[in-house]
Length: 105
Image: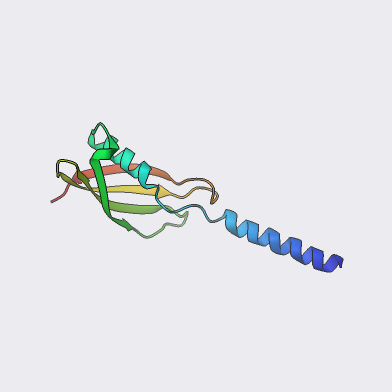
C-alpha cells in the first residue's frame, strides 16, 4: 500500500514540475491593443484593429518575437513587433518588451 502511495506522490510531483515549467505564451489582445495605442500616441485602444499576428521562433528561455499589423480608425496601417516573455507559471501572464510600430509600406 505504501509503495502505491509513494508512486502516486512521485507522479503528482513530476506532473506539477512539468506544468510549472510551462509559462503562458498566448498574447493578451487587450494588452496588445492598449500598448499599441500608447506606442502610436492614440487616446484610446478602441481606435486600433490588430491582424496578422505571427509568432517567431522561441529562444532558449521561451521568449518569442511577435509581429502584427495594426490599423487605426482613420485607416493608417502599421507593422508592429514586440518581444513576449512567458509567465513563470501557467497562472502568470506574459510580459512584453521592445514595442515598435512602423508605417506599413
